[in-house]
Length: 111
Image (cartoon, rainbow, N blue to C red):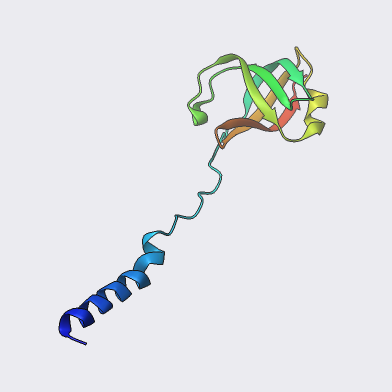
């Protein structure tokens, strides 16, 4: 084997050994979550248990950089929350933005 053939074989072998790292995909990012540490006062505009959605009128949520809303939709993961979410009900709640969707985490009725 001459020097040129030997060099080519080493070069190709090195490239093939490095190939798995060259084409490796980055690991999937975990679900992005931004949580509201503050408790927010609001009023239920509508609630739909079938779609797991509720619309809330509320003031500014500074921790999420959210302006006051008149009918902001939130997703409800816990179906038991719907008992407290009747249109016109005054509530206090916490929320988080998970994968681009606002999710209601906790809720309590205000008497």
